[in-house]
Image 1 (spheres, rainbow, N blue to C red):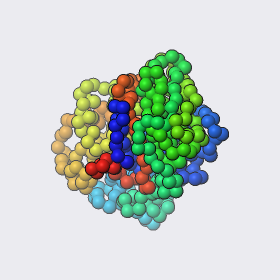
Image 2: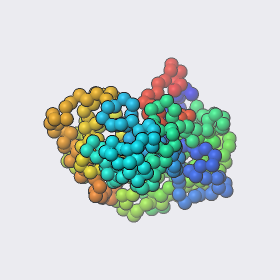
Image 3: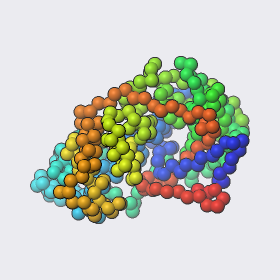
Image 4: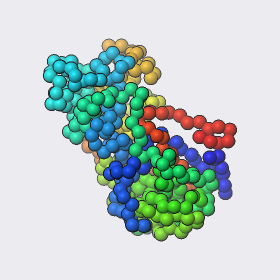
Amino acid sequence: MPIQSVRSRAVLVLLALGLVLLAASGTSWWPAAKAADKEVATDNLQRSLLLDTYRIVADSGAERGETLYFYKCWMCHNQYTKTAPLLKDLYQRKTLVGGAPVNDDSVGAKIKDGGPAMPAFRPSLSDTDIADLIAYFHSGKCCVEGENPPMNPFYRAETHKWPVPSGVTGGATGVVRIKSGDSPEGVGVQLIAPSGVRTTVYTDAAGKFEFPRMQAGSYTLRIATPVPFKPYRRDSVAIEGATKLEEIALERVAESDNLPASPELESQLSGAEILWNLPGTAEEKATLQKNCSGCHSWQQIFRSRYDEHGWSLIVDRMMHFSGTAIAVRNRPMSDPDPEAALLVKFLTRVRGPESQDAPIRVFPRPRGQSTRVVVTEYELPQQLLALHDAALDGQGNV
């Protein structure tokens, strides 16, 4: 797919690295198609919320437990590190390291309460989360090392052959209206093809949008990131050529710009927006940016909650080992690190067991030329791959 520029409209091609799009047949995330052009009250295709609730592979059970293990446990419990036991065949052992018998109650208690070298996950993981983790331990597949990653249930490209648009104009058009009278500019409108590929365009100052010309067929129409508006989604929308879509009317979540600090809304914020909303000094936030931006997003940090002991272990693990070499310490624990100490205090205050978020605000939406963009997102066949980079060849192909 060569990247083209038409009428000063840039094309941005993003590779969605194994994240969620389209559920396989029979999963609860991709409900059976509604009647054509029917609006639904909620949208369970919000990828960011599925990520934050660890449902990118499954809603529950051992498969979801594998996702939790990947994000919460693997960094310490893997075959390369020496500071924590490998949990493969956990239930074939008689006792835990501390001497307690190995059973569901003792394993669950250990996860909740932690230990001298293990964070307490009670503030971060619910009883349901821990039950899914235990189901994964029982499954016989434990533990994630990358050799056998789970299939991505939203990957449909092989079974639903569907061309990806290579242009930037000539497709479906429509208008977005905000019921409160707010400016409709910069709202991301998205079509999801049967293959799972998502195409997003943005509204101009008048609320108008235009998609690239697409293969005729049935699509899902949604607002890509609805906050500060309520979700909007329609299934089984017939697209053929320059289809004129029905007006999209959006309703605000709240009358003011102060939005409730709910998981559903916070999951839609960028890492910068989350950090902006959190209390803290310029020094605290700059220290987080300096030490934590190089490896992962801030969302991954802020969706967790730990006590001070837990954060001290995690910050030490992240800051005091050599690059990506997870088993090689580069700074003795006895060597004072003022920046690490500052981060532990900051994170404990804003993401501790008892910390509460104030009402949240979002950054302004794109304006002017910033709305002249087409975003195309793809799926990869497998999940939990932690891939980093994509490259373009001389013809602009990913």
